[in-house]
Image (cartoon, rainbow, N blue to C red; front, side, top):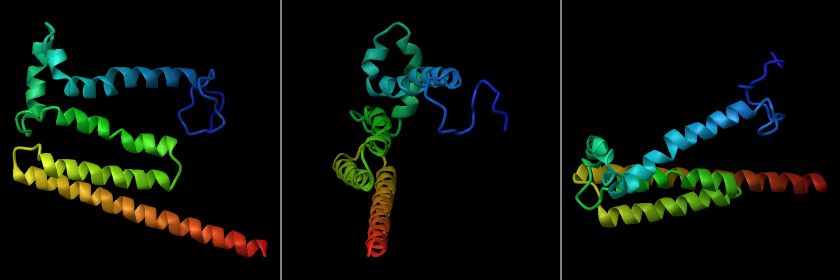
Length: 164
């Protein structure tokens, strides 16, 4: 383990954020987020803003490729889905366990109901597949919540036995 190297690529909890050892990688991460991660959902969620610009017409084939499976009027669904994928990360970062798993399950049920109501895809098979995959996410959330609560209950029982 070479600790003299100025950039740390290994997971090391002792490295302070944006310290001299971490700053280059932190800046690189922010640049990647600003260039690659944030613009794609924004362009897909607000296509009229992009297509009105002179350079926006160059993106029309990309939009057509993303919009092809969706019914007319539901082209925004692809950008919305990209943003909705951020919610599990937000729940994991800011909500304590097991509440974050419960919120993920509730969100997945809400998304499932909205998807069943609107049926944004042109093909029934695509709508069915998305419902099936969302049901799998709900089952995973239920299983994770169950085992998380079971582990917490077992740990609390062990602490009670150790106190006696």
